[in-house]
Length: 352
Figure (cartoon, rainbow, N blue to C red):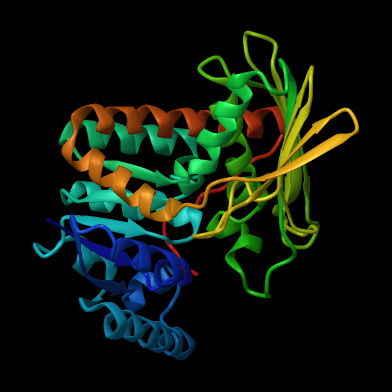
């Protein structure tokens, strides 16, 4: 059994990760780490406000241990150097992923990292080199790729029901988040590309196969926060199949796939974020005739955790994950180049 700890008492860790982890008997929850004052403040001075925020973090962490056991670790460094831990789950803001994944690997800990793995291709490659050298497992939590609805859609397309697919459209966006959300903080790796666009490119890569590549990209920045708010891109493969994708984070909610074929069109509305137990609706259109069917329900988060366990115990799975993580980072890096975006990553500083 592997002992896993959580770096930071985040909302997704409590709401999604821990309920799913409880179903995976190969893992034991060892505890949750709260940042030390120095870890939270970074190069800035530790203030009374910092201490008040950390007291609130401890209150969140107490809810974790009350509900799921384990203990509270005082400091991220304390957790990643502890003999009580085999692996860490890192749900910090994106710009902090590199620093704490690196520290985890340096201390011999396997790392399950929320997407994106890092905000920089060079950083991703550095971490993957470290993981290979130390024979450690790393995993990027794009959990939707394990949902059974993708297999059902793949099977329907392969059956020829909608003919030869001419193009795909993937759209993912959501309304503006609350004030103070890290997604609007450039220093923390905010922006729509890392929070929504990565999903679209990950799925496009699945649909297009090994020869998937970006051919054009564009993004729009918010003039106040200076983070990208929405973007679009086109990806193709050697067979000439096209995926058009659009994403944003101050938008009407959308999470859609459309596959437009020579004989019909398939569309569905929860392709990237289907919650546990939901049977998403799928519509098949043949000219003006419409048929609605249910796609299978699933627990994608649990399956993502199980994939991490495979990487801990199977060398082929571990190596496959290295390649998948680098491929995804290369897609995002190419988007940044084609769209003219520039990112800045954080080495030290306040984790939101």
